[in-house]
Length: 172
Image (cartoon, rainbow, N blue to C red; front, side, top):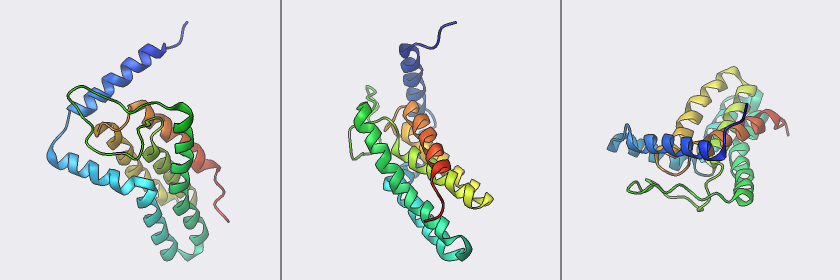
């Protein structure tokens, strides 16, 4: 029994990307996804949420501060992987991306990596932290929706993020 070929994976990736770029697009949804993307840049939304939690929950302050730093750390780690892989961002004829990016490299998605790293770590701090996965999923889905990433970029980024979120020590 043979595995999936690279061509089959690439074709599936393109089919899903095209579907995400052509379905459920309204000005309101596109604006919301752009706003989410901006909030996720450099892990900023995760930094803000976790600094607020550190202020509000003094008994877990140190762990929340680790989570706050994890978003930007995840972005940095992600960029190192991007430099190794060097996959260009997707180009779909007639469907230009609906946002900008700091680099032309696509794999993996930094938004997915940082979001899933922080959401995973937050769940380790407090079970209510699992709600952060709702935001992480929305941020990650926004990347191919806006044409910034292939779906596989997001899946791999999320996987790297979960591993990072499980491995990071939650105390300084």
